[in-house]
Image 1: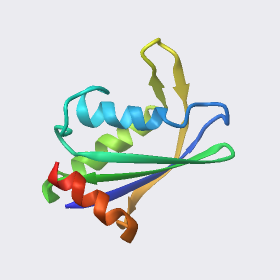
Image 2: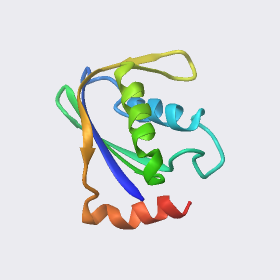
Image 3: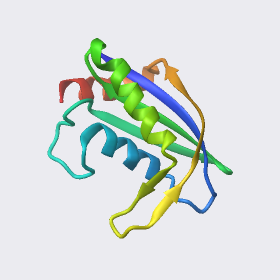
Length: 117
């Protein structure tokens, strides 16, 4: 099945908006670079910046029984408020909101690709 998890983060406008997605990948996959498919939940993270807010939309595929665990891993990664690049540089944020959303019609094809690996 395909699911969506959304979050709003407060981030410095100069901060790298890709860092929270990296934190999510690390939480779900154990490593940023790995052979596909993702071991727990194939996923895609979209980040949209609006001033000092970054709106995340995480599309992921998982068995229904794994959905709560995947959402918990996403929330834990985002609640950490930090991601570190390979060079040790840290990007920080504050989690303002997080929760589930419905898969949008435009996301259905990508969700199908995620679900089939």
